[in-house]
Image (cartoon, rainbow, N blue to C red; front, top):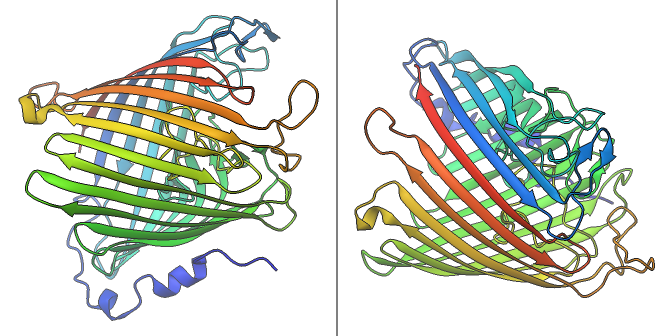
Length: 447
């Protein structure tokens, strides 16, 4: 018998603000207009991926060009409007967005095709579209410290998190609920019946997972909460059900232990369990995966070591192009989440504000995974060699470098420039590739 997610939406409704703390909350004074915000984000995005000695999933007139190279340059204008709430015990409001993606350059055979490259939508002839857009919104209702949204939403939690690593953000359609009645505690719940990936204009697409592909599932529901015990310790518990596919359960904690004004120890732990559910659209599985972090922060410097293990027989899966994988070793390209895979990563961060350059930061990390074994994977996640045998003893490594600068003052204040480079090498189950991403963002606050 399958168990239910950690917190159902109904349970969250019962918890979400109908106790004494919520009834005692002060009525917020801002109104529908006074509390409104309108912002415009200009995002310029360049991405190239060199598949080294292997063919890339690129297309030229519908045929694989085999050039091993994907490249795209595009610009996005992302406009968001968030109203305040009407005054009174029950306040109502609206959120809306209009997003436009414009192709600047990507020639035939370089657009990435239908793959995880996902910068621009590609038509049936394998050509990238010149432009595409998203337009949507949600109605919202507030009762004291509880907010209900119905429509197009952007949840952020360890089991359902809308991704924003491509040109346009990912979104979901459904109902979400959030409550902040208890200081330090944020409760969330939702039931979503559609998703829209970064390269889609359709806000009613079916669900797709990163490793299993499209799934015939009518909805995903989630619930849980984050609690800051104090300024140094926080914990998180969540559960979700992708109907007829999986139940996922998550537990995590983050700890900072100050030793002086300049020195602190940092740590964290993340754990997921994923089990097949209902009609088992992605087969039978019962996976446990976890990651642990230990590090030190000294002034502008942070150094951390992480370890991650997948104890299951299948890939640990999540919604495609979402950020619903809160594991330390899920990085720019690799997730280090293959069956039985063990991985280590060393990461270094530098904040240059301490050296007189506020807004400039640097990060580099190196991760290595081993022991990936598909001997007992189900049919949906199985990977085989040229002889048809399951892949075993698979290895990979990835090195990432990132530099980011945010303008602090003047007319260009908040203009952000980020350069990301990744190099991965692997045995038969993954690609060898080099990536470069250049992202320039300029946010404008209109209201």
